Each structure stands twice: as structure tokens, then as C-alpha cells.
Image 1 (cartoon, one colour):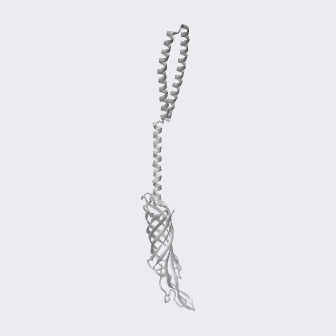
Image 2 (tube, rainbow, N blue to C red):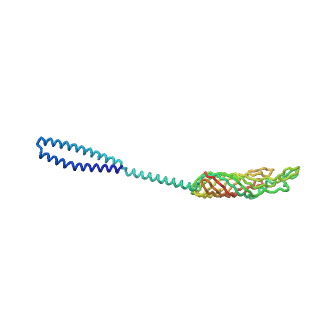
Image 3 (tube, one colour):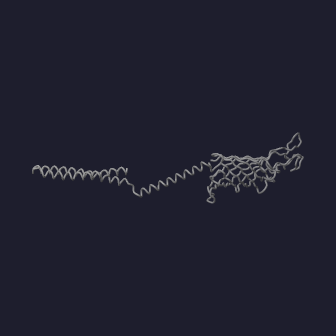
Length: 313
């Protein structure tokens, strides 16, 4: 628009200049010729005509000058000030920087598909510190003293397998400003432990003869723990549980004459998650469960080790 107006203004100025250069000599020559050849009356008529033509030309020049002035005003109005140009440039730079940061964040998350929360399923090997023998220490039949042990009774096993599931909930990013790329999560975990079958001293009557009963021994652990997960933004993320709360439920319960099945304790754990595709994760962990005392003679301490599959959300 500015270039176009400049062209119009230049053309107008050239027109005025040429018109002035052409009109002035013609008017002087015509006036001189008329004085030399015309009579007095004709001379006065010629002067009047020439004056009229000059006035018309001056009116045209004034109109053209007004148009040139108007074009100048339009050109000045269409040229932005330096302050406006500077402000617009700064806004454009800020928008470009913002768009670049959004794109970089999007590319990073698309690359690693990192999710803050996770639903996982896990399982593996169990090794308790000691077999839960207290559940075998029960009364027998009427012919046995309280706390007696029938012939053929065996103790429980200290090893077995486990399966469970849990949810990680994101609580804080940056670990309250202490560590970059580190998240604090809350974990809720439920885990079933099976340590096989054993033959206990609780009797069953068979044709009036006392005989030991064979039962399955298991335990359920329900835990709530803080989880610190490192290397946010990467595919591989190690984590630790400094300490958490665990409720241990055993089955069968302890000695028949006491019948207890719940023991609170603590848990400690470490492991890692690895993002293999979009929101799908795999991982592994090792956990140790500790109760500071026994449950009526039953020890519930032990560790689990295994793998897991998780789904981020």
C-alpha cells in the first residue's frame, strides 16, 4: 500500500511540474503575438480570453495540488510508527517462543509417553523368614492334652509364590523442590501370598479316630506407601519405597486357642518401570515386609521378588 501511494504521489508531482513548464511559455507567446497583430478591441477580447484560460488552468493546478496533498496525508497515515513496529515484533517473538516450547514438550511426551499415574499387576517368588508354624500348634482330640501334636503333623513352608495389583497416584513433581525430574507418588498395593499346604495337628474325626488335617496356608498383605520415582521424562524410571504401612492377614489363623489373623507391619521396596510402547510399562521389584513382633508366635516377615505389567494414565 505504501509503495502504491508513493507511485501516485510521484506521478502527480511530475504532472504538476510538466504542466507548469508547458503552460507558462505558451501563455506568454500567445499574449505577445496578440499584442502585435490585433486591433485595440480585438486585443481587449484576446486578453479577456487568455485570462479566462489562465484562471481555468490555475484551478486545475489547484485541484491537482489538493489531490497530491491528500495522497501525502494518506501515505503518512499508512506508515506505522517505530513504537508500534517494535511492539508488534516483540509480540511475534514471544508467540514464536511459546509455540516452540509447546512443540518441544509435546515431542518429549510423545517420545517417552510418560504418565504420572499407573495401574499395575505383579507377581513372583516369596521367601518368608520362617514358616508360619504357629498354626500347626493346636489342640488335638479329647485323648490329647491341650497343645499336643498328632503323629504325622508337618510344619508349613517358608517359600511360595505371590500375585497382586496396585495403583500409583501422582502427588508431587520435583519432590517438593529437592530433586529435579523426581516424582512423589502414593502407592496402594494388595498382594496374595501362598506358601503351600501342610499337615497340622488340628484333628478331624474319622471313624472315631483322631487324624491330622491338611490345609493350605496363605497370607494377604494390604499396603499403603510413599513411592519416590526418578528420571522423569525417560523411558526407564527407577523408584524406591522408603517405608510404608502393611496389614498382614494370615490364613488359617494362629493357634486355635487364641485365633488371631491380623498383624500390622512395615514394608520397604525398590524397583523400576520401563515404557515399552505408548501407555504400556513393564518392570520389576523387590519388597521386604517387617513386623516388629510375632502374631501369637507366628512370624509374618519375609520378602517378595518378581515382575509387573503396568498401564499409565
